[in-house]
Length: 364
Image (cartoon, rainbow, N blue to C red):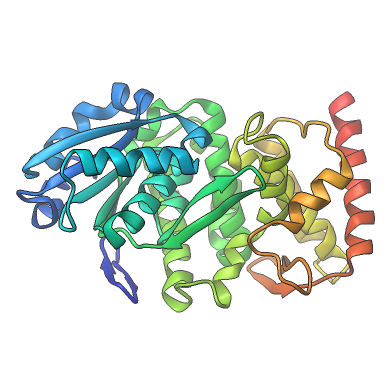
């Protein structure tokens, strides 16, 4: 796997079944003799802590900082509690942090590391498919506010990413399916061969086949890394990675970050953005392929949501501009339009129809 180059330096990325077992040599120059703060949740520590220990044995001292599981970790109060604990434990500018968990733990850990004493080095060891293909790569860190997801954050690239696909075998089926949505998102706009691979190999992926997962994780990370290297701070082409997230994040906020996983909400965002794109010339055949693949994931129904609440949540999205919402809309399989501002009335009318249709689907 090639390294990710960015303005802050180079991030080596290691992917594959057993990647964690072979990472001690990679991490030793960074962790050797330092105080290491490991940010993780109780379920991940119970499942995988023994697998992590050899990789971080070179640290001079390890302090485990346990946080809530899932999106509940991404609260400013949780971050503040970690900073206080790190100070109490003698954390310094040359201490280290390691985020060990899913996307929420990675987002929180990166944010905490980026702000503590104006920034300390950290490592991402993602344990979910969603985190391995997306959240751990690219340097985005954030916590949520009740008004919106990822609304407080900064760019802070990890010094290394170790994505061990062997850890994915313990994922609940819903977590695996949620992570695959992010792969679908990247494949549809960036990598048609990867999209075709998903169509062919979906059953193996849903069965958590380690070889199939390793192939897909590496392809997705390669696609994302190429975009990040070109546009590290989302000033241009990196916006393509927001496909499906404008509505997806609004759904999460309206549900109080519970009831649907991130990927499950994004899947509804992908469907809606595709509807908007059809009016701008997206080939119907491409849209149908995306819909079929999402249908095969058998994701949960969309809960009943009120249109005004969803519209308000979209308006608070971090990608919104003073001129209006900025949409990422697929143009065809493998290409997308970026920063598209559509008339608010037409979007609201389309969204009203979309939510009504989702409600009918749920009742059926």
